[in-house]
Image 1 (cartoon, helix red, strand yellow):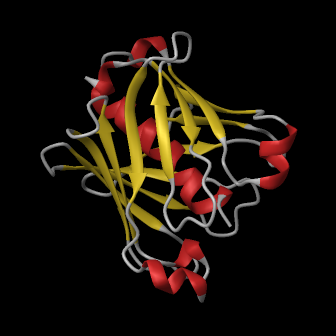
Image 2 (cartoon, rainbow, N blue to C red):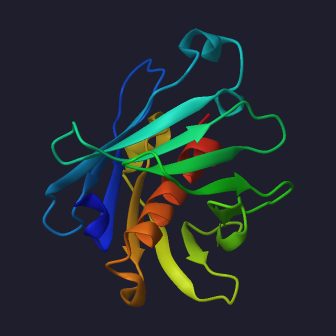
Length: 193
């Protein structure tokens, strides 16, 4: 049911000395819990020695019951670029995401299950807005980073995002899944230190 939604508020949970990130997935107006995304790092102890973005990890997205898996992202070892595979609730590959090498604005290339390009998740260098666009430039969805307050912005790496699927793609779980995966991948690859 999570992927039937057209909009999400993604709130990264704040924690002290954590080795894994967690994100509350909420309805943007009512605040109702729609799901939970939880990072499950493969080698937690190695994070003390190696930059987080280089290590393998998995992000599991749960339905509102926090038991039923809706989506899963897997990332292997990364050196110059990162690549994440996106799987549905049944373990079928939906596509993959990889960051573009030498991109100032943090572009993520989106590919289908057969690794054919189906879009790009990008925004301006200094913009808090990112869009998932297909090769023809049609906007599939938008992610806006939301101001979380001075204290949270200065003293934590926890971010908040608003995701909105374009009306013509509402009700298409595969498109919603790729937009949600791109948002989480962006935070895991670019926004975390």
